[in-house]
Amino acid sequence: MLPDLDGWEVYQKIKAITALKQVPVLLTEAFSTESIYPKAKRVGMDGYLIKPFTVPELLTARQALLDGKTYYPFDSTNKSGNRG
Image (cartoon, rainbow, N blue to C red; front, side):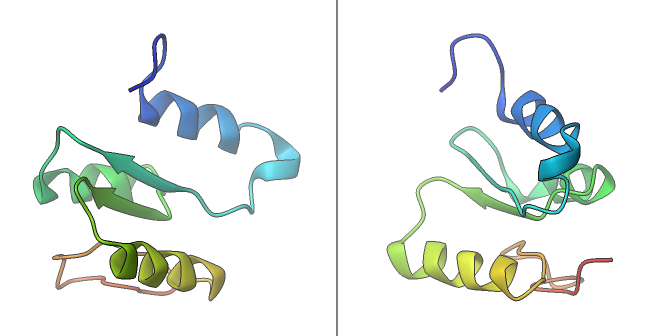
């Protein structure tokens, strides 16, 4: 947990920096469900993991982002889909 910002605010700050716009961001949250995926997609989030997650799942998410894809586990509409 972050003391003054939540993950969504950190994501927005990162993406507001021109030099970092193309850097993929994987948000992880402990207090969430997969119902948050539509919001994450709407704001352009690159990937989203709900804690607890396994090391293999983290590595799969990382590889998807490095391959230029998004990562939303449990989302049958766009699991590891291509980013715009």
